[in-house]
Image (tube, rainbow, N blue to C red; front, top):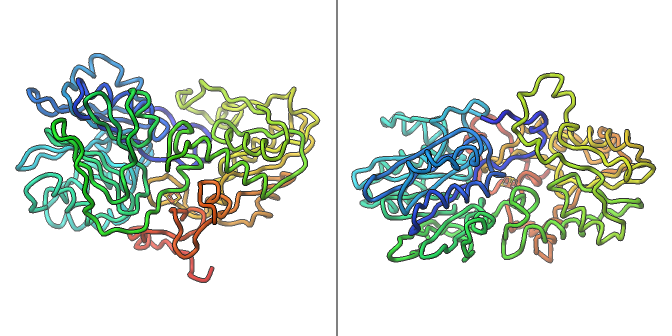
Length: 486
Ligand code: SF4
């Protein structure tokens, strides 16, 4: 398993990426490429299940990067057939940081009507309660993953085919889920009724594919057809194509607004617009809301780059790569020792001293989580001779944990949960610190009137503390929701 990055805990992490293909020769090869394009959504482990009419179901699950496992001919030869699904994970609920291979998806279940495999992106917020109930009724769990509940709920359903059993199971599940699943002949895709996590449909040759993001369609030359709707289930076969239906009670959509800010790749399309364009628009909004006199706008690479360009275009202040990222650092660095840890950010980022010296710098970053990285970057910029450092952040203060499939520290570890903006500015010892407002963020993602306070158009719980689905398991463990009047 790749070791955790020394300062990896100062970012939020999407926990999974999913991909499926049907009606193509050696579908597992397409899945491997799709997962490779989704590697930013999970680097800890990956798995593929494939079905071949002669050889039946086969699977391979490995720790580490897709490119280090699923490029091997020896592995890919074990995954023949025209239908396959796959999953990459960061680290989901359960054994965080000490994952066993049995926690690596897709999960497989053998039912009376045949086998089925399932891969899940999101988080089931009532998984503890479901697991307790299922164990009391005789289910034997193989993993610590919340997603395995879906397989056990399917096993208990009395429906006669797998898609209907899946509907039954998913009606019991609360929280966020985008799912790809497969039987011997069908590729199935489902999004939860709120559509919190993404899922898109593509066409590749005579076949079809489902992916977390459109960048995974591009890599295999698939045509992007559309997003799977919130609450929609598609059942796809090579013969009949796509059959769609809506098995859940309709609810207002609550797509994760942070996908626009950070999680999705900038070359993906969300809500009909490129993520890159949206991030540039966020930078423009930020410049309108929080102007400051300065000499250069610099991104904290890579995710702050489009917003920094937007800030520069709007403000007229020149843009420059004041910080250079070591592209090859990644997570494959040697196991971090204490000494290496102390080097912290310098392992990954270096200041372009010739540009910075004597200048007033605006640094644009996507988010502030614990604040440890921001503080170190500021020190590096000042060490390089900057006259002033102004932070501009392309998301509102992250003050609440996410329970919908994003790895967040506990609330008391989030800088914005314990400090006001002014206190954070003082804590980071910068000349100024400004976050985009929630309304500004909504405008940048295309909501001209800003956030609808009565019924927000997106999930923004990590900023607002307003959770669209009650996090039942967390409430049972003592988590306190924001008081209504706060
Ligand atoms: S809480 Fe934040 S990160 Fe989680 S789904 Fe909602 S907007 Fe996305």
